[in-house]
Image 1 (tube, protein in one colour):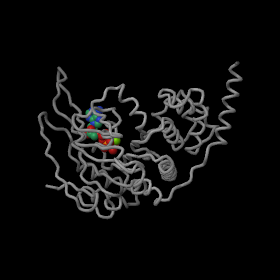
Image 2: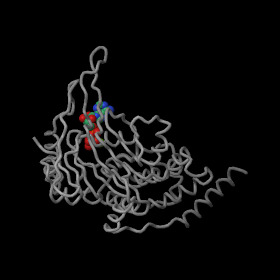
Image 3: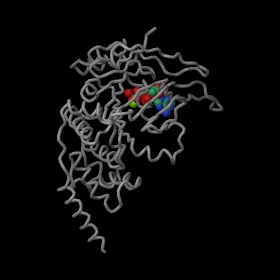
Image 4: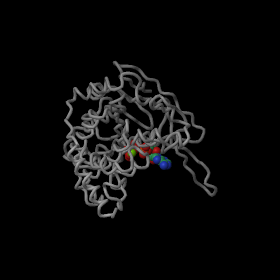
Length: 347
Ligand SMILES: Nc1ncnc2c1ncn2[C@@H]1O[C@H](COP(=O)(O)OP(=O)(O)OP(=O)(O)O)[C@@H](O)[C@H]1O
Ligand SMILES: [Mg+2]
């Protein structure tokens, strides 16, 4: 077969896939809640217990370890099937490190990560591979997550081939279906990342993550770089995909307005620790920890220059997470203020 006929048949496959692809129906918040409650019925998809991740600070002639950044300190939380847990907090509080530890990019110094009832901490790379497939991460900067020399189609198809999700011959057809699912089309298949807008690139990243049929997506500031309208579109897309596919999200963000829109539950991080966790309404309407209150107080300011000033002030208040060697962290005690709403007891 000549390469021209191969191209033709691939194009034909793509077109038929476009016809087959269904448009997703927007779910009402009530429907999303129902998914969150009934999605799996039993055990949560992800259970994190006492997780800590530190970074060594080295220096001197022999590059000795001088201190440690306690980026994540003894955190525990769960994410249910079809549920969105938002992880919020100011810059440097340990949100990304939490996400990176979950998907195996950082090694924890303590704690347990149970995913689909299997312990991930201590698993060797080979055993982790199938788990990694079903837990995907999407990042703030979609441009750097995509290979500039690969077409959209090739980028989306690559992880599907690597993980052998579908027979190789079916990958192009599935890629077109995915493009359609994220609001793009077969005409985008052969385009390169620079030919897309920021919002479209983030859609490509979502399609790439969806290709390996994940059950959980860790979205690290996934919409933070987008302007407000596009941000809303991508959030709607994520919510639609959640209702359609029963996905769970760990939604990492410093933007409380976005969090209020997308999350079912909210965990507030401060200096590597979760200081408050609860249902979205409880945290937004009845914040208990002084840090959560400060974080929320910075939200409804319309003037961006004032808002920036406020945020900076808050960030300045956060002390460093660097600790001397041998430092033994104090265990946080929690009190339950309402159903599923826990708050760290302050000194
Ligand atoms: N590879 C690393 N080596 C050393 N320190 C690190 C490393 N990665 C993160 N840190 C430190 O760990 C702490 C938590 O960083 P992290 O990136 O998790 O914060 P974040 O909450 O995601 O912040 P942002 O909102 O700015 O993305 C910070 O003090 C940071 O400087
Ligand atoms: Mg981060």
